[in-house]
Length: 176
Ligand SMILES: CC(C)(COP(=O)(O)OP(=O)(O)OC[C@H]1O[C@@H](n2cnc3c(N)ncnc32)[C@H](O)[C@@H]1OP(=O)(O)O)[C@@H](O)C(=O)NCCC(=O)NCCS
Image 1 (tube, rainbow, N blue to C red):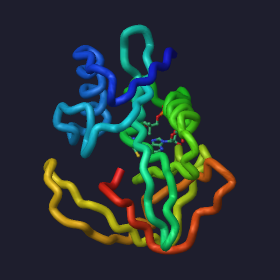
Image 2 (cartoon, rainbow, N blue to C red):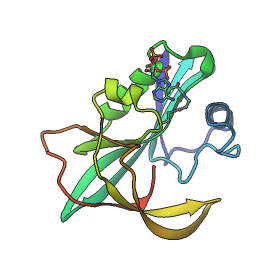
Image 3 (cartoon, rainbow, N blue to C red):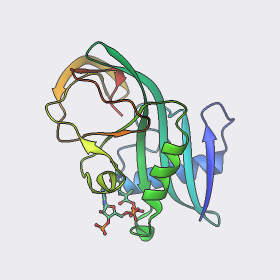
Image 4 (cartoon, rainbow, N blue to C red):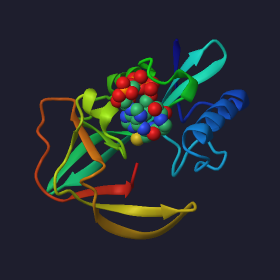
């Protein structure tokens, strides 16, 4: 498996973009609508290739969020996915590790996971009683700022020696 990394500032490559959008559509039931991103273009991506076939993708968003009264720099894990034919070979875990290695001083990695298994194995934990405020974007339109209990999907991994502060979370932007 060969890994390549790309920043949002790079000029686009039509064949790479086509491979990304088709992988995202295959892995997320078409919810990306043929785009290479869901709500926003990630700042960076890590791609896994087998020859010229794109087998895996992870996007990275670098952001600060508010937790109680503390501003916390975080790495947001976005659109982690692997082509179904290559599942259970460790590619997903390798992409997640690769994304974390590219954090630059961010204290925590955050992921929103319907299924926690891969993340728990990689050292992520679900937070209890998490009230999260975020910008709701639907169909590529901002429609409101909402607050929700996201305890069932909100996963955090410590990347430095900082401890996750107490308090409600304001993502200062959209949900990953
Ligand atoms: C989740 C996913 C990226 C895992 O890729 P992978 O290369 O198979 O991952 P690995 O081989 O490193 O690890 C496999 C383990 O991931 C876990 N896993 C499987 N599906 C998962 C899912 N949808 N979410 C989280 N973890 C998952 C399982 O524990 C699995 O091991 P097991 O079957 O022996 O229990 C891949 O199944 C996928 O692309 N799913 C569709 C998109 C998706 O749900 N992405 C997660 C967004 S939060």
